[in-house]
Image (cartoon, rainbow, N blue to C red; front, side, top):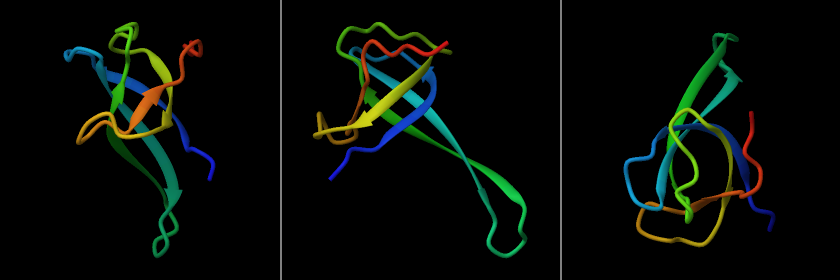
Amino acid sequence: MPRRILTGFVVSDANNKTITVSVVRTYKHPKYAKIVKSSKKYAVHDPLNSFKKGDEVRIEECRPYSKTKKWHVVLNEKIA
């Protein structure tokens, strides 16, 4: 099964080897037919502590690193 890849912005880099990434998705509301934005935050494994707040990053689904970390940063793909 292919792994999901998402793109988002780093909103926190306070923890060691962990960043928080906010991913925004847009979709059409099924009843009202308006375009709606929704965001979700993911805890992401960053082994080198190389990403800072405000960076745009690409994250990939992976094995669980902890209770909440099930994503890691696709290295060498710093966007911007």
